[in-house]
Image 1 (cartoon, rainbow, N blue to C red):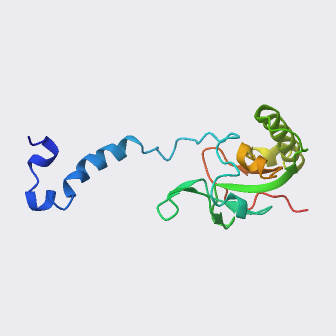
Image 2: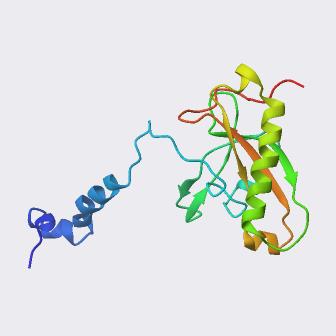
Image 3: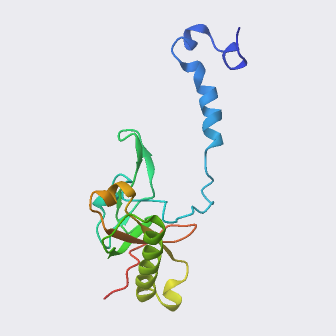
Length: 167
């Protein structure tokens, strides 16, 4: 039985796997996110388990997670702040030791990152910016990770420069 996708493709091409391309292209089109659609950045968007995030230091800019074929998973990478970045680290909060409690950790992270955000950006400086925490996971917590990274971003856009105020 011949399917519509392979009916018009010569057998020498099908034998090389090219017959799958029309189907893959159509499937890929279902998962394309329009560039104007804002990404929801919450405390699950990036975690301590996201490859690359542990290499980001305070004040550095970095990309949103993007699939890396060499890593086989989504990865964040350092990006210079000048010229456009998706996010910028603006501080860390150390979480008191205790048992893993995701709800309590989330409340702590949003409260601490929110307080730091309010100290850095007041009035018009905060316009067009938002923040989110990057938290330990249950696995990294078990390994002793007690740090929350706070990240600033521009909803629906990119940061054009370092957003940290001169201190």
